[in-house]
Length: 276
Length: 281
Image (cartoon, rainbow over all chains, first blue to last red; front, side, top):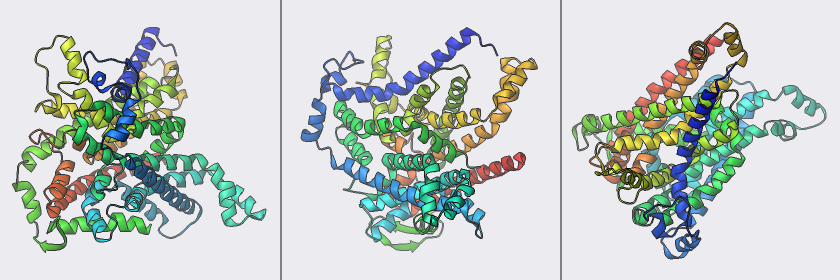
């Protein structure tokens, strides 16, 4: 097929425009990290920091009321949720893929249906449950909601992956003297590893970015999203550089992590969205 | 599995149960049966009036976001996935950034842009010689479009990814065959791409509507329902009722309504999925 070169130019132009539009709002906020407060909101605005400075990190750490511990909370909660979610989804996915049992298909559909329940609809009962049973304002409490939130999607994703692993390989391993479990983690697991990575990344991102549940179910053990929101209310409109800095710390490591594993993430997203 | 049941299914039943009771935030364990009064309250009480403000705001926000996300997502997917485009991976990596950024950070960065006095938008407008600079998020007429733009920016990546997956499922030989048969680029799009993309577009549509109806973070952090309830979408209403006014029962009633909307969309989604599966056989 011939493609006219004017169309090619137009395509690249539109793609570039969209790429710039995608990056700009984030760049604008994050670049404030390296500007002095006066420059961040000053006229005329500068696209690049005039005198790049790291002072905001210090200011945020020592002079403001931003709770640095919230990052730690987020790390603990997101990591825990990722581990729980991925491990259980792995076992469930493997089970669904390998064994036949009554009501299997109904159960799979049921798991998918659970995924469709909006958290918004259960947030009030959850709040009540958590308050009554001492899970309110704990990291563990958040961890299990997040794990639950991602486990059904991940089960489907991993079932799909294990389906692609030929049973014959496992049988061969069994004959060679592996136990069922050994066959799983020596043979099937390595083959399905990209799927497991996708599941883990998916769970981590969802947990890391979650805001509504965190705000409702915690008061002092806040993850960074809630802390940022509070900070926005308190200082936000005044000190955009500090706000930029706090956001910078929260998202840049994750964005870097993400761009390293971008391929898996897209697999997870597309695979999870199209359960057929 | 047990945890799933405990944390999702049980609360679901509870939500329906609580919606029929009067529960105060301060006394969670005391419930008084009030029948459907919570539902009546939602419709009768105001401001914000449920029928006059909350539903229109929700509809406006959701439909605008869907149009924006799906439109741009599909357009960008079509552009990127042309065969000769170089740097596909780079474009994809950039386009997906807004999707992996926390809604709170998104809210902060857009509030920074929209800020009437210090924001870059008004600065640029002033440079262009505009006199009456808009108040953006403080402007009654502009606030919903502002939210739609921010949400489109955030959610397009999802539609983009789904449509990309769809486009990649179309075998290239089909296009070659169409070209041999003398189809123009427009015809190839109309008779090859579009019919094969239909299932992806429909599923995308359903998923995005569900996601947007249940999307709370962005609206809450950007406008918190204001100004003058212009952005009090149903998700924010639920939160306000339950956790700000302390009417857990009324909040639960809103939750049940949200659930009903979701259920309807889920049924739609499942039915469509099944149709697709049947057609494949």
